[in-house]
Image (cartoon, rainbow, N blue to C red; front, side, top):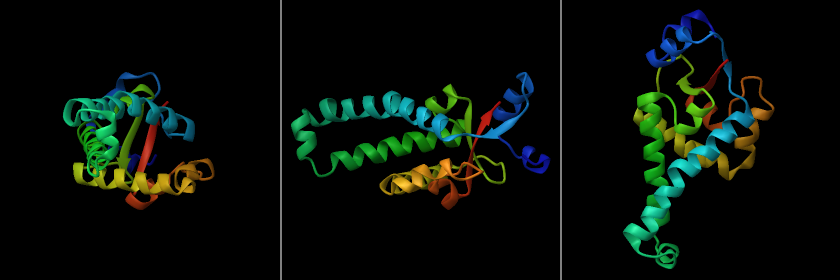
Length: 156
């Protein structure tokens, strides 16, 4: 990354870089991002769906019959992910792989911006090509990264 951009990186990322042996940042690859997403799904989304299904609605059948519950689950999950990205720059899955989400200019993402990026992620997922784009791009960006001018960095 350019040194001009480095000074705008979130303070937590800069301090972790200073403390680590490696000061390098790389674009996160497809597999790292995918594994981080699996961790987030199991650590955030699955427990959320369990509480929503059995704690709020009452049963799996009622959840399936509900017109609002699946949308509420996705909205709450997106809000949690956006909050974590805005506060820390990472979700639990991204933290496990030393990945950070920042704007192209190196600045932190805001909550609203991260929430919009999450809905862009859903859009990317509906067209499988949007999620698979990092396999073909040098900068490893998915469709939602392109749309919202973000990069996913890996400490390395």
